[in-house]
Length: 390
Image 1 (cartoon, one colour):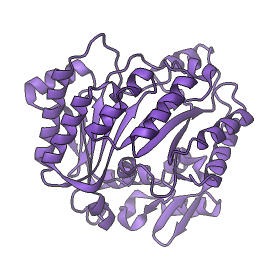
Image 2 (cartoon, rainbow, N blue to C red; image 1 turned 90 degrees about the vertical axis):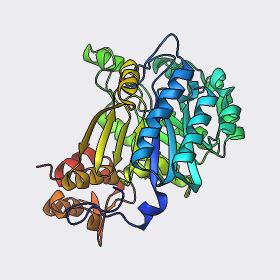
Image 3 (spheres, helix red, strand yellow; image 1 turned 60 degrees about the horizontal axis):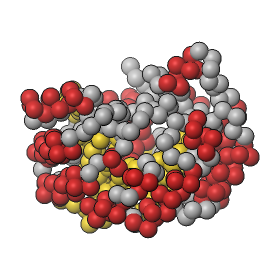
Image 4 (spheres, helix red, strand yellow; image 1 turned 180 degrees about the vertical axis):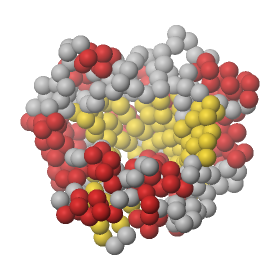
C-alpha cells in the first residue's frame, strides 16, 4: 500500500505517508523454547554470526530494491531472542537500512530482549549500535510464575536488567503475562501496581493463551494444565484496563498500554495497516498490495538466500477486499478504531454493526468505528459478526 487502494479498498491518508514504511527483522534463535510460545523460534547449539549477518543484509537489500527511496518510520528486531544477536550485526543492519531508505528524523528502532544478565551486558553496545527502544520480556515479577512459564531468569535478574535498560535506552517497554493458573485478582492487581511503579512509558500485558503446537497445549490436552475460567479472565482484563488508565497508561490496543506519545510506532503501523517489509526466517510483509512470507526454518531460509538472494517462500497479491478485511481485523484492536470511509463497503455488515452498537459493544461516530471497552472482551466474536469474508 504505497499510494492508495481506490474504490473498494483502503486509501492512504496523510498519516500513512508521514509515518512511512516499517521494517521488521526476525532473529529466530532462543536459548530455550518457552512452553507457551508459538513464535518462529529455534534452539541451536551454535550460530555463525557472520554468516547470518551477511544473509540478513542480503534479504534486506532485496526488500530495499523493491521499495527504494521510501521513508522508513520504524525498525523492529523481533524473534526469537534478538538480544542474542551480535551488536555488530544489529549495527550493520541499521546502517544498511539507512543507506537504502530515508530515515524519519525520529525513527523508532526497537529490539526485543530477554532479561538475563548475559543479554543485559550487551545493552550498552546495542544502544551504541542505534537501538533507541527496548522491549523487555520480563513476563512476570513472581519467581514461581517465571518457573511455570519456563523462563530462564528470576525476578531479581529481570529487575536488574530493567534498571540497566532504563539507563541505556530512551524508551523501554516490558511484557507481563497474566491469568495464570491460580492467579487471583488481588495477586494480579498487586503485581500490576508494582509494574507501573517502575516508570516505563509502555507496558504489554497479555493473558495466557494456550496456543496449538506448544508444550502447554499438549499438557492441556492431557488435562494436566487447567484452562483459565473465562469469567475470571474477564475480571482480570477489566481490572487491567482500569488500573493502567488511572496510572496514565491507557490501553491504545487491546493488550498494549502507553503514556500518550509513547505508543509503539512500529506496531501501530501493523494495526493501522500501513506498509511494512519483513526479513529473516518466517517474517511476513505487506507492501505494494502484496503479501510476503519468508521460509520459516532457519536452514531452509539460508538455503533460499544462497539459491535466490532472498528468503521469500510465498508472495501473493492481495485483492482490495482482502486488504479491507485485514484492515478491519487489525484496526478494531485499537482504541481509536477504524475509519469506515477507508474500508470497502462490501467488507462490513452494516446491519450487524447497528445491532452491536445498540448492545453497547461498538461505537460509530461519523465514519469512525471502534469497539467499546465492554466490547473488547468479545473482540473475536464481534469481528466474526461484522466482517464479511465471502
